[in-house]
Picture 1: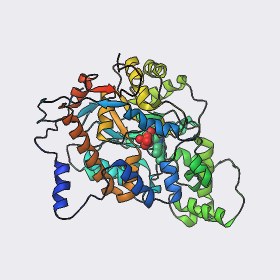
Picture 2: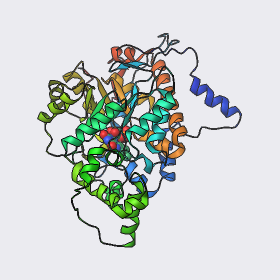
Picture 3: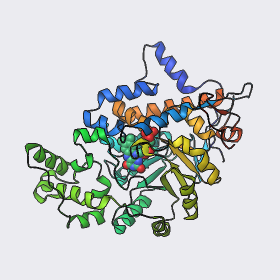
Picture 4: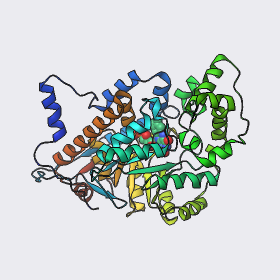
Length: 444
Ligand SMILES: Cc1cc2nc3c(=O)[nH]c(=O)nc-3n(C[C@H](O)[C@H](O)[C@H](O)COP(=O)(O)O)c2cc1C
């Protein structure tokens, strides 16, 4: 894998800046320790936001397993490796990136902060980190794309963005979403396969709260011409009992519908959009054969997200897919599912040349290092950027991006690797199974 041209001598600039500011009595706004970041965000978000963003499926064992899987591996640092020149860059789908990570798609980001997707988009663009725009975004992809282009200006980093697709029931709508993603400058398409049905999420269930029914997180649909046409024949869905809360929620859905709230109230468009969304979102009858249809429709690289088995990885390759996101959706779908990191080595062995992004449970620079050493081409960051958004909007995400980049760079250097390729080439020398866990070494 080729390298971006980021070369740093001596100290780490971000770390130095924090300590220098500290001399004047300032401390970072975004807690550098991920546990503290999660706790601070949990305090600032409302109950519904906290449940939706922090929650997982069932008893959340997979969420825990995602974290434990990282603890099951240990970095084995090498000394005297000359790490004065460091390069954290990678090349992914023809694009040079300064860091080996992307921002995984997260829906309904306005639950974290009113800046929502646009706040994250701007922060990502300012740092040249690819942002995977969610199909369940609070703001439409066109608005994010414009914000990213403005933010990046003429920086050489560019403002890379990908689009994540939830394949809807209507193929015409799928084609429209893909065409809009291409027109919005998206450089890859990520098809999420693990959410053809919504997982059983007790934290949301206990509150009786699903954001989409409030008209939240459906902006990609309400700004789509095909969806708007389909909406005219929106099927009647189960109606909630009529209470003051029902009325308040109908007004909320109208407020989130594009254009005037009054108009959306009078026409009933706010509620019709929710109904049409419910009717079109889920496509549980999707099969491997359907991928050919998508492959024909776009020249963009296609990645399948939610792959956890070597067999599925091989099938994806055979279907002409360009990459995989090894992910269990942050433990939000199948409680008891294998941790993503545990699934990674066998998938890498099954598809040796395929770009693999690993997400679910990545929190620190050390986690990124371990994933790269176990076969990932790059990692996908999830909840931590939503927490940073909750705490500081766009500036919060930018600060967190600087922290995670600095932490990864220092981990890499202190482990005796001067580049990402060094980590990948040196595996399994730089990584070992925690002796308290009985299991074979990677690639053994
Ligand atoms: C609040 C929330 C919303 C998410 N929304 C989406 C989504 O719209 N599309 C998608 O493919 N994945 C979605 N994901 C999954 C993430 O892309 C990613 O796989 C997951 O966050 C990784 O786990 P982690 O956050 O624990 O690291 C969502 C995750 C969270 C936490």
